[in-house]
Image (tube, rainbow, N blue to C red; front, side, top):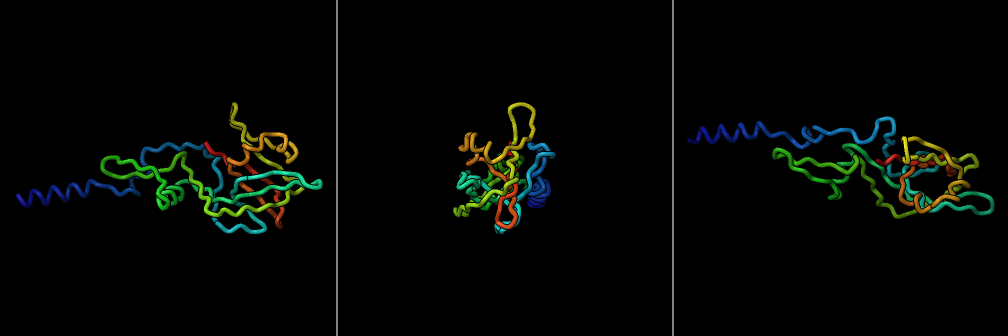
Length: 177
């Protein structure tokens, strides 16, 4: 009887797989690969670089445009799942005895720094936005055109903010399914 029980336990353990092995099984890519965003690679925000952030305010003062940016980390894939697990936000699903962790739409945003920065926009700075009303396509808008639109939309959409020597050169809306 004891050898049979030992054999049963060994076979049962051998049949199990780890969460890492099963995490990617039977998953379809949600975001088209051509529109996947760049993953934030650093929490440090410098004078020159590319960082994800929310545009909290866009305004004009004395003929120059300014934005107030709340920098974030935009993560996808395994990095998103790991960060969500650390913060207790990952979705859990048990499949065949294995726990599979995931995040909604394969992305996770970390906004641990409440500091907001106001930066000037360069004269040639453009907003690149996604039009999702029909076929998925991108279009550009100037700061003046953006001021005419509903700015409340800007507050909740992550952007890739490009800066050079402390001036914003481009803002590209991060595609989020």
